[in-house]
Amino acid sequence: DADVTQTPRNRITKTGKRIMLECSQTKGHDRMYWYRQDPGLGLRLIYYSFDVKDINKGEISDGYSVSRQAQAKFSLSLESAIPNQTALYFCATRGQGRNQPQHFGDGTRLSIL
Amino acid sequence: ILNVEQSPQSLHVQEGDSTNFTCSFPSSNFYALHWYRWETAKSPEALFVMTLNGDEKKKGRISATLNTKEGYSYLYIKGSQPEDSATYLCAPYNQGGKLIFGQGTELSVKP
Image (tube, rainbow over all chains, first blue to last red; front, side):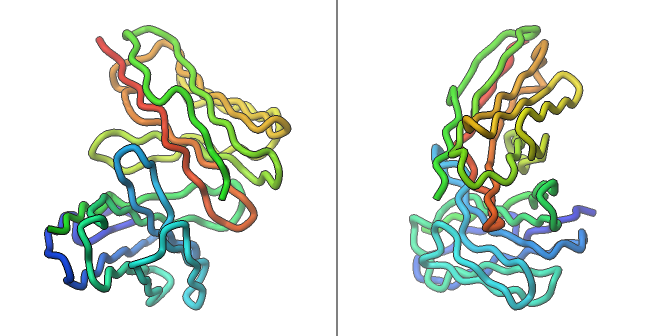
């Protein structure tokens, strides 16, 4: 089983719909992150969380919200999806300490028509 | 927001060629530098996490060096193989607890 699991893996939906992407991890890490990837733009940080009660905005948080329901779960919501939110979304986790790498989920490919 | 530059953007080499890429980043408030390997249709995987000026790390044919005073890191691949084809991402880590990713270097190795 994957250490970082994202659901769904693919989603096609219409403009204006509310969408939730879910991420769960079995690594026991405190830190969790949501990124989006667009061609030519690399990975951009949407939101991140260091603990259940901690939520922080990243570079591109407008149009998104998150919920850290438990240490192992971090969900990303698009309240009213728009076509320019079509992208590949990654969840990642990281342990404490400067030597710790990030561990990524397999990604969710989201298309908004 | 850190300004992270990776060069070249893409690289096409023949099997057996050795190659290197550059990552440059602001040298102030440095905390760590990450390198990731990202194959098509997969998720990024960590290669190295480097923290000290002069650090040199190696994993098989891949190695990396770090200069925190001038703000750059090099990634080297010796004797490239087709399975090395991927996008290589660098990401400095600041004390705010978040990585800022460069746009990556896309490597294609032809047999």
